[in-house]
Image 1 (cartoon, rainbow, N blue to C red):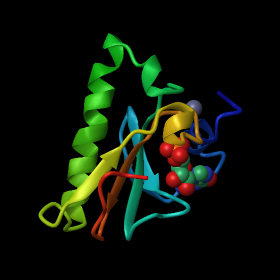
Image 2: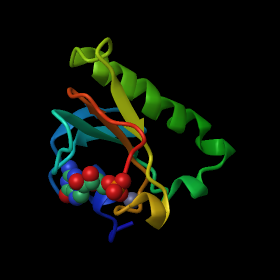
Image 3: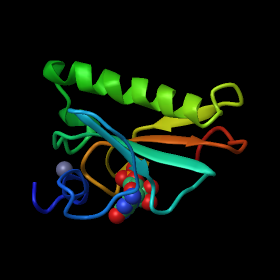
Image 4: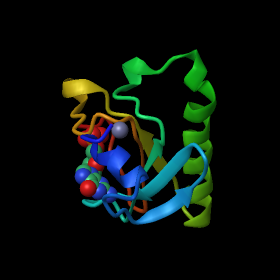
Amino acid sequence: MSDCLFCNIVDGEIPGDIVYDSDSVLAFNDINPEAPHHVLIIPKKHIPTLNDISNSDRDVVGELHLVAKQIAAERGISGSGYRTVFNCNSDAGQAVFHIHLHLLGGRKMSWPPG
Ligand code: 5GP
Ligand code: ZN
């Protein structure tokens, strides 16, 4: 999708601060971090929202979480804790319509989220 920001990062047309790269998944630091660690983990395939995942996406959706776990371990926040979030559509504040798993950590977070 040429008009999708995250597809453009996958294609290298827009630079990203890449922290993980596999055949199917890319992870990069959020440009406007909300925590000391804020990484976006995305499928390379364009999927607009979580509503659009299907059975054929189960491997890549699983990989997103395995990558979150791996990055948290690499950054030493597995024990202190972290949060993973998918925002879906307007009530959740989704701004980029290519699914992305937020990995947030390095500070105490409140619950419930705003
Ligand atoms: P959403 O609100 O859609 O769940 O999250 C979108 C995220 O993408 C936000 O945290 C925002 O800071 C991040 N973001 C927006 N544009 C860019 C960009 O060009 N590069 C990177 N690395 N992150 C971006
Ligand atoms: Zn896309």
